[in-house]
Length: 245
Image 1: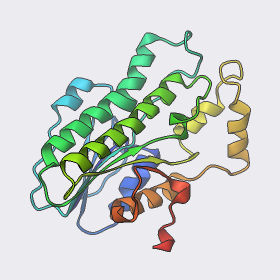
Image 2: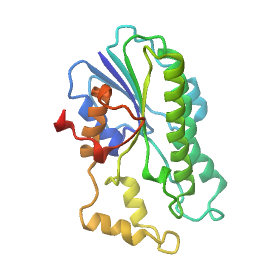
Image 3: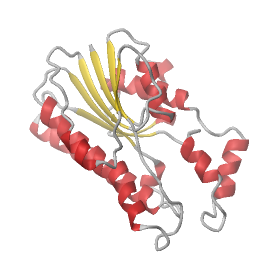
């Protein structure tokens, strides 16, 4: 059996990836999200908000001694207020970092603690963003948290190769590109005063430059199924072509 723990499964990339993986035989998905939108015999929903760090810290990854593979996909992220730093609330800052960086770090820590000694394939996939490398106006918390998640991925990779060279947990930080998700809807509705690039994001939608969550999910699934094909921690879905392999 292959096991996948995925955050943010109620919509967008998380939902598309979960539904795609569940089409495979011998696959079980545990989704962590406030709301449930997937109903499948091999899907279990944990109705948690990633901003609830106490509940996230209390989560116990189960023993899965007979597993063929175990994967953690940190997909959920937040950008609560789209405005310049100095004009957003302290609560929004805390919530964004809790959801986008602190909770994923806790889950990585718990995952490694439970499954480090397992002999099966184990993967941590953190969904990154171009915002980790490019500063975007009014996205301070999102850019900073995604940069932190990317560096976290690199540190885990270094530690695994140093301490467990024969059987490391693989870790990837994957940039999905510009995807047609709820976040894009929110960005297109922001005033130009708060976000001067709003016109560009409206143009992305009007000119069909947005990838669909299903397209991105197919490429993420390819990485999860065949991690041996990819040497780097940092990947971009535009460079992933499942049909080539």
